[in-house]
Image 1 (tube, rainbow, N blue to C red):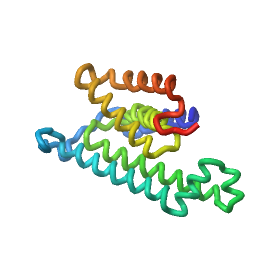
Image 2 (image 1 turned 180 degrees about the vertical axis):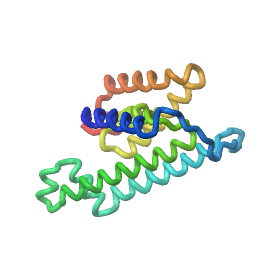
Image 3 (image 1 turned 90 degrees about the vertical axis):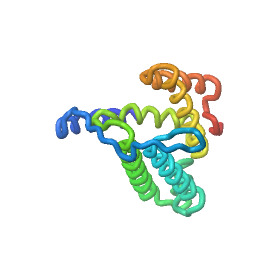
Image 4 (image 1 turned 120 degrees about the horizontal axis):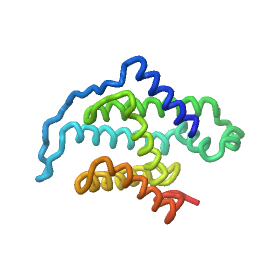
Length: 189
């Protein structure tokens, strides 16, 4: 994980050298939508719909397909999965491809609501790690619940306090959870 963070900083600095450190801002579907008295941005509803569909499709892929079962087996115990006939190198390549694809989709969806710059990835990477640990390592339903809880906490902090404190609130929630339930919300011992 530390090597991945180091690679993140290298990629950010290369991107700054190529494209500069300027912020690019545009609005896409930035009109309000009234749903039962609550007002949402249309772009946020589109993001919610896509995120829900992608998450559900990926969950069904992991739970119902042969390749998904191979990925879950390799995640639990690589040696045993290899002995059972799972091609570990292929599984790792598929997982890398899925990770890159989902990161690209997330960045594309996120660009509908925030300003784009070359150093924007670190905050969202940290939030993603907190969501995964909060939900329980390896638990997709737990990650959904963890993401929902983190979103609620962030919205409450943004409403009552400064938006810069939301990351601090995430860390606080993360530390409390690790003290109370180190395996996460739906994690197994």
